Structure formats: structure tokens, C-alpha cells
Length: 255
Image (cartoon, rainbow, N blue to C red; front, side, top):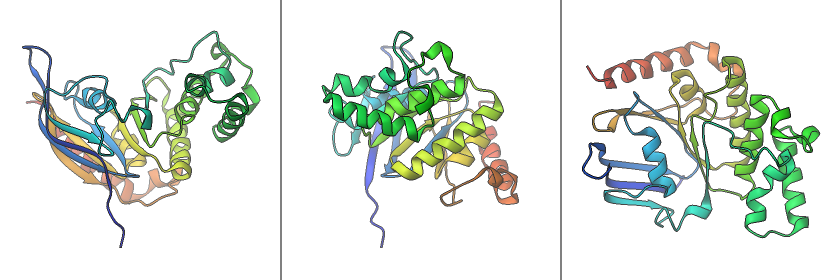
């Protein structure tokens, strides 16, 4: 029998800024190792704030948050954070950008080269290893950013609308590539998006948040199995799940 192992545990977590409004209400959530959890909800419901709390970029105001039994600060080396923009350093080549985290860890040159070479092959950028960010398409920049995030072997990947700047076709293709990486690497993923179809395609589970203050409105399992392909989007089962999640999202919006 598969033993469930929690990786992220939030118990009674709340977040407010100074004397201002409460962003997150007492919040309980458990995420198991290997889950791909998408966060959906109206603007202002605390999706990005929740990622920042998990990453240790912002402290909780109340409650307890543990990652692998550690505080976010102590667990920071086990995770990587991808933002909406690729945030590549323009003066560094693709290879140098991907290897930045390993440099900061003082990895040996041979280890850096072997690791970066493998990641560039994984994300399909070996042929542009010597190029600069200005020479890359939006999708290529995001693949380089993903490779950089994976270089330090994270157990947890936090992604805040990483494909938001891409056109729909590129966004779908990047989602398919992300799932391929996920199947190979099996990290745990927390993924913020505003797209219901993107969440349904990628996730093993979707958490729908309601605003004012941010709280869980629905927790929806997505059971399409592994190795999802583009053809999944055209199936009745996929459409049915999109309709279900869209309805829950409408319910979560403020009146």
C-alpha cells in the first residue's frame, strides 16, 4: 500500500501585512511528496502570497508551516522558485545562467559542466548553450529558467504563473514539456495560474481559493494519470473537468 508522505503542511496559517487587511485566513493544507498542485482563484485571493510563505520569502502571521518537517527558512535549499518572468541575467550565456545556482553552491567545474550539459539536453537547449537571453524566444527563455531551477536538484518547485507571458500555443507546448520533466524528475510542484484548462491539464490536484480573505473554497483531485499528451485536451473527460473547475471558480468569486 502506498504510504502518503506529507511534504508541505500548513496548520492555521494566516497572513496579514501590519495593521492592514488579512490576506489569508487561518489556512490548513497538506501537500504530499510528488503531487502537482495548482492554485486557482480570483485576483487578490492570496495565491502568490501562499507561494511566498512556503518559500520563506515572507513570514506567516499566525499558525505553523513546515516543509519536510522544517521551517521554510531551513528548507530553502530543497526548493526552487520560478516567477512569471524568466529573470535570466542578460550578460550571461544560457550555459552560464543555468549553472548560476551551482556556482553559488561552489560546485566543482567538472560537476557544473556535467550537470548543466545534462539539463540543457533535457530542456532542448544544448544547441543554444552559448547564446544570450536577447537571442532566445520567450519559450526558450522559460526553458532555460526551468533548467536553472532544476540544477540544484530541488525536491519542491514553486511556480508563479511561469507561462503567463507566452501565447496560447507556446503555453500549451511548455505545459507539455513541463509534464515531461515532472515525470522524469518527480519533484513536488505548487503552481499558480489563472487558466482553468492549464490547471486541469497539468495537475494531480487543484486547490480553488476564494478572496477576502484568502481561503480554500474547493480541493479537486484530477485523475488523468501520468504521461498526458496534447490529445487529452480534446477528450470528454477533460472537458467535463474543465466545466467542473470553472463552476467552482465562479462560485469563489466575490459577489
